[in-house]
Amino acid sequence: MKRILILCEGQTEETFVTRLLKPHLNQFDKEPIPTILVTKKLKSGHEFQGGITSYTRVRRDVYHLLRDSNAVCITTMLDYYGLPADFPGKKTLSAQTPYDRVAHLELAFAQDIDNPRFRPYLMLHEFEALLFVQPAVIPEALGVSPAGVTFNNITQFNSPEEIDDGQQTHPAARIKQVLPSYRKALDGPRIVERIGLGQIRARCPHFHEWLSYLERL
Image (cartoon, rainbow, N blue to C red; front, side):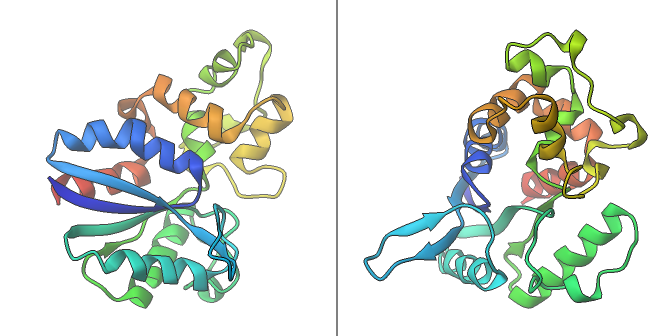
């Protein structure tokens, strides 16, 4: 199988790759292998993983993965929301549509890495957007009746990927405000498993484009 190395923002994305992407891409003779971003490394050798503290660390980990000459592609699963100020393209980012903005950042990211095997993917606006493909599944997975749960103003967006990145209105914040028991690393992958890749692809064109690229490799 062709090896695809995926630099993940955290444990949630790593689990998503292992549980959902791996069995799907195996059907296309592809083997996705997740690696969690290293955010800090002590002199003792101990590493802290998850979250983006600076682009320098992202760049370092991407180049480390590119050393694997057996991998046909190195890609990423990083949140658009909360990207550091030094991320490529941030200083020239204009107020366009979410899809225009993410395309601008991914292009700048790819140009900075400058390797034909590198294909960046930034999640609009973060992993939790995928959960809003079927909002009723979120409380159900947490043992709460969906009849009494309302996520305010999400119907204004044409796609879950367009749910904005405000400090109190990004997808994860919307979930925590209504369902404070939500735990990203544990509940996030369980919810998307219930929803399924087919439904996610149908509602999330940016995700669909990325997964289609990996299938064609």
